[in-house]
Image (cartoon, rainbow, N blue to C red; front, side):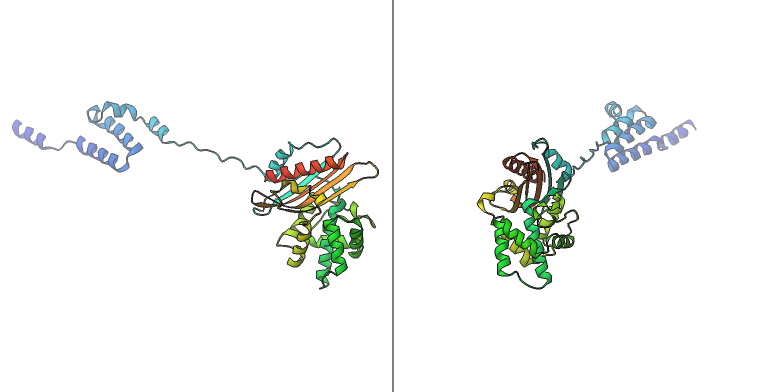
Length: 314
């Protein structure tokens, strides 16, 4: 009886071995963290003889969890174009008592930025608006410009001739005609000067950027023929007026109109420049307005520094 009982006990399968086999199978299937956990559990239930001491020592649950956690890097906050332009403007020196405002658009990306507030005298940059108004009126009347109008337009834009500007100012209906056209163009903060004083038209940098988009953009109230004509004149500015936003261009890639006016009451200067420039393979529309500089030269230097900063910011 004792011998039979001993034989039956030897033949009985071990209760620990299936557990160990299952644990080892789990190691093969899941690997990594799960494998380490299984070895720890196997040791706890089956005894230290089934797991090496080095595996048990290195595979605590807390160590496994820490090893499997990957650091998460938060995305860097985006900086707005306006903030970039404001930062760039810190390098521009503005004379005490002077003011400046700029709006810039990267034509390729559609990104834009603005700096400064308030209205400014247009001085001669309004001549672009005068010709745009004349072209819009001609379109609406289904006619072309006359030979006289074309000659006056050339002198007004290329040479900044004031007599020609006064003639076309009268032809468009002075401030009423300009303001009506500007509503069509989408300018909301520009008001024509009183009577014959077209140079004292009030405007903002944002409105001048809107006007430039009418001249250089595809979505415009001006047809392609009118836009091409106006662009061409702005690209043929007299040599003595090759300053302003052109300072931000690479080489000769620009088309512009400048304005300058010394105020009789103070002797201080209004210096403005608007146009398209090409830099680093991108086209930019830039409008810079300023007032309060003590000389024309200082005003030009300010406008050029602002134009460079604006293009660099985008």
